[in-house]
Image (cartoon, rainbow, N blue to C red):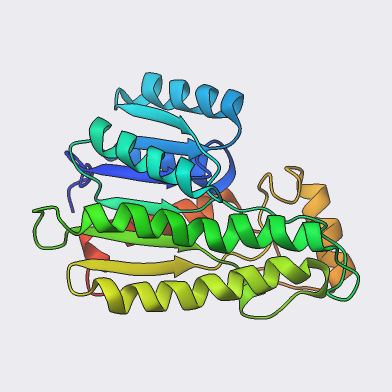
Length: 246
């Protein structure tokens, strides 16, 4: 397979300033993609965008956007399609975990609203706006690919990540419904990472190890995941080798 298989294609990455989004952005740009990076953290977004652009020489457009705000998402979508020749990949990755560590009975309404609005409503809003335009593109054999970030917590609910678990379970259903709605021209998939060293739970490995001990979670490889582990999967899902996976 051509190492620069994304040459001439555009990718939108929400939550693109850090964590999985940042790692995947570098990988896509290295393989020829021009990028729109979406995040709510303006300073970190600018820093990440400039670094990727300098190192890969690909076009990187930073857009500050709260994905839970429909007006901001609509504006972001218009700007995206003005900046990129096409959008072949949407990595819908923005997420949060308000009031982590609190069980479902004790969780506050504000924490519920924040988490559900960003994680589930936000992904739906971005899908709805971006995919409408993706579906009009004349790209063969597919018009595009959508990849969501859900979580193992959406499959096996975590009492310490109560609302987060519910929101991620919703993303799994959203992914399936989108696949049915957009086939056969756009594929819809989701990745479900477990415990990884990202900014969501704290960047330090010690923080994640402590969480593993507290929740009595064990991984078969006896280690926590890294951003690079997710990047490798995303490279496959973005490539022609995954065209029949939906």
